Image 1: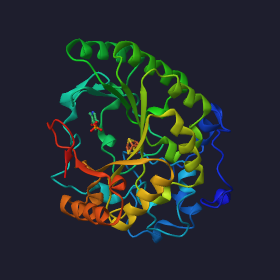
Image 2 (image 1 turned 135 degrees about the vertical axis):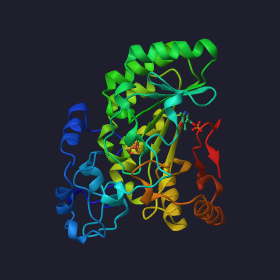
Image 3 (image 1 turned 30 degrees about the vertical axis):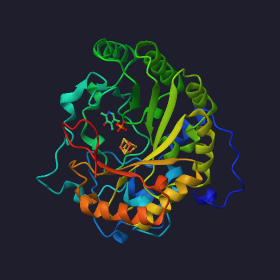
Image 4 (image 1 turned 90 degrees about the vertical axis):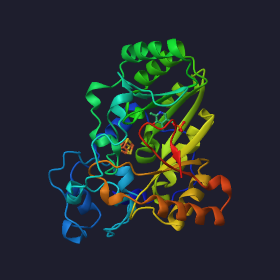
Length: 342
Ligand SMILES: *Cc1c(COP(=O)(O)O)cnc(C)c1O
Ligand code: SF4
């Protein structure tokens, strides 16, 4: 599996050579079994500092393209840490809940309407990777996924009261959907809400770069609104040459190409790790946007970094690098009118 070792490829060609069926096939080959992944990294459960949860309710799912960037033989690899289902996820912690953002009160069908002028669309509940720290793990998706009809009805009801400047297609991960479904959703957004900008929140170009096909780029380029894409990278090692090439293809189709990260203990909670990430993003033409503190969601307690440590790390970054490479450290507080800057 390691034939495509990262960072040692000839120069990237910004042209997709994959199509719909090839990324679907690639996704079908993703790891769904912890031992199989460990085995391919030359590890066993005995090498891990902590026991695995064999029966986690949040499924194990990791595409091979993402695993190819993990270091063989390293049980502490920062990419591996993000996907391993540890028994510790079951630890009781009174601060953690299933709905940390109290989102259920802002949900109207497939829409989450919390902030002025923007609305977030739950385009699908699915993702191409299951990140253990994710707040999504306990959201009741099956009730809220956007069909074009539900999206149309929800948007129409919203714009009756106030205009929308931006519609955000999120999830789950909207780029799990077929291009035809994405095109339909974008068409509904433009026709019903006519926003200035359509934004996508996606981790797909990072975990399965072959998904950035010409057909997907056509959907983006075909939009009459300004397209904004916010990818999700937590560690510099996540960006290999294939991801670089996918981002290079994506960039011309976007008015802005941004990144959000989550501050994760043991993964990226040092100024050195985050500076390496910012420089790597810069090389890829991606602007650092947010660095989120983890939401207090059940199962993610072992990733939590406190706000004070987050501030120290950001201050250190600000001392050492250009201001435009320092992400905004934020927390989401239930009921607040925006993300809370720290
Ligand atoms: C984060 C978020 C947004 C977008 O916020 P920005 O600060 O504009 O990036 C919009 N809606 C919801 C529900 C969100 O969680
Ligand atoms: S929503 Fe994003 S962070 Fe959560 S599991 Fe999906 S890809 Fe990972």
